[in-house]
Image 1 (cartoon, rainbow, N blue to C red):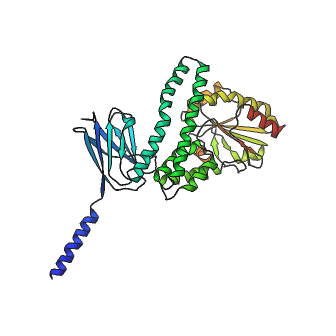
Image 2: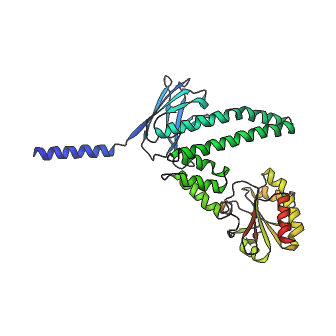
Image 3: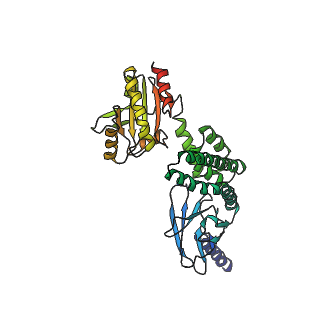
Length: 362
């Protein structure tokens, strides 16, 4: 009987242990923090933030107790009412955050292997980016002073720092492909690389994570809009409710260009006269153009169409569905298709657009 009771007691202890969530701690020792409120935010995919808790500092100290989560979870430490933030990859290990609350850039966190790898990455990046902060102020000053010579000179220097920044990220991925930090970095920088490079680095990553899933989806979407790929059909409406179907336009024209733009996009408005001139020159030779506005504001879109006197088809992709299908990140962005519906060019501006249309339509 005694043995049975002991077994029941052991079972209850096991069940009690199963019901108690495992936790790790984020311990903060930050100078000048008394009375400040800190917010801990979590994201599992780099996109969707979840507020976990808020604590108040006392004697320059505060602690978050955090339930165990997926090891790739990214945590963001933020001060209430401030734009400053600090990122961490605890991987369910205790983390100690130290520094001065008035100097968020130099706050440090120590913890498990993933956090320490993230520290290594951030320190390497900071050495490169710090000169760029001062340079950015000089660039803005040159712009405000309308000093184009100095502006171009400083921009050239900034471009060097930008490429060093990219190289630093590439080096980290190459040397830490087994770290979730590498997953996060590649997801964050995928728009700055050629598609072939994104594929190359994605192949290096080990383990699974939402960041890696984002990259895989990005690759698949962009492969659909590479040269030589067939068009992705859509139907959008003009302001008067007329349906515009891409498949029909391709069937009835030698070349169709879809041109993503917006009323608020300065480079787009600068390029509109070029596109307009191309349309007027080559429309009778078989060119059709569909201007696809990503404007949310219909009135702003219509005003821009009128101001720029755009004579070709104008539709609006307010929901962003067509833009997503075409993996559009930056505007202006355009794609040219031949009569077979195969992409023959993309991203052409200025003289490049004129040269390509002359090649295929003259």
